[in-house]
Length: 232
Image (cartoon, rainbow, N blue to C red; front, side, top):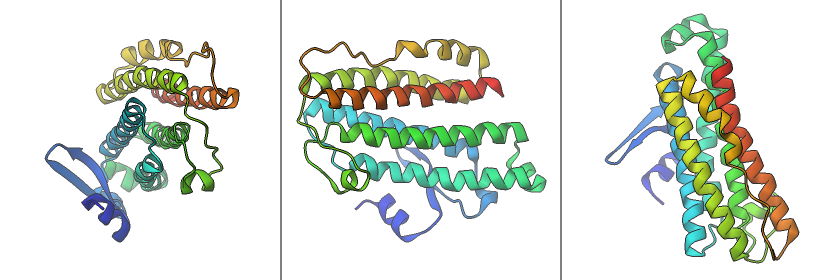
C-alpha cells in the first residue's frame, strides 16, 4: 500500500489536488476555503489520463487489470464528491463564492465538468472489465461479465483508447487556456473518435456490443465537457 492509499483510508477529506514528478499537494476538502477548484478539475483530468494509460498498457502486455482501475477511480469519485459539495456551497453562499474568486457562471461550468469526469472514470472501469479474463470482486459487485480473451477486439480497443486519449488531453489543454475557438474546433472533430465495429471473426458479439456501448459513452461524456464549456 502506497502513501496516498494510506492517506485516503485513514484521513477523511484529504485529497490529492495536484501531483507532479517530485511533489504531491494534499488539500483538506472538508475546509472549503482551502479548495482550488481549478486544481481539482486539473487533477481529475490527470487521474482519468492515468486510468486510460493503465488500460492501454494492460492491453499491450496481454494482462488483465483486475480491479486496479476501480481502485484508481475511487480517488476520482472522492474528488468529485467533495468538489461538488464546494460548488453547491458557492451557489448558496455569496461570501464563499467570493473567496473562490469565481462567478456563478464559472461554478456552474465546473460542477458539470467534474460530473462528466466522474462519469468518464466509471466508464473506464467498465472498459477495463472487458479485458479481464476472470471475474473479480468488483465485476461481481457491479454485475459485469467475464469474456474469453479476444486479441482482435482488444487490439481494436487499444487503438481507439490511444486516439481518444489524444482528444481528451487536448480537451484538458483547451479548458486550461480558456479558449472557446479551440474548444469549438475540437468539438467539431468529436466524430473522428468513434469505435469501429468493422471487425471480422469476433469471439462474442455481446463482447463487441458492450465495447461499442462503453466507448460511445466515453465519446459522449468528453464531448459534453466541451459543449458545456462553450455554451456557458
